[in-house]
Image (cartoon, rainbow, N blue to C red; front, top):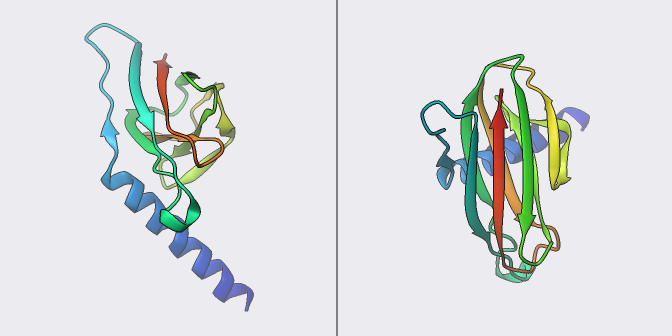
Length: 131
């Protein structure tokens, strides 16, 4: 039973990541810059209508680099989660508005911005720095 539950959880995580990745926006930094500022809008809705619609950004980075993220939102309810290559959620970088840390792997990182209450639409600004 444990193996079945673990297999099901793995499939769900991969499926969710794949669905979000289909709507991911590739982030590129301006020439000579280490910071990019992105603006977007998260949408939410009642669970019966599909729930939240997160905004996903993907960017390539190398192991050992430092990533710093700062998120502000009009309704002060947007948060983000950061996934390392391979869909592994980075500890401490979940449901937060600020985070900084050394990256554990080389590859594509995914930053998912969503409304904290899963119902409220809000505009946001996300500042990403990689050094």
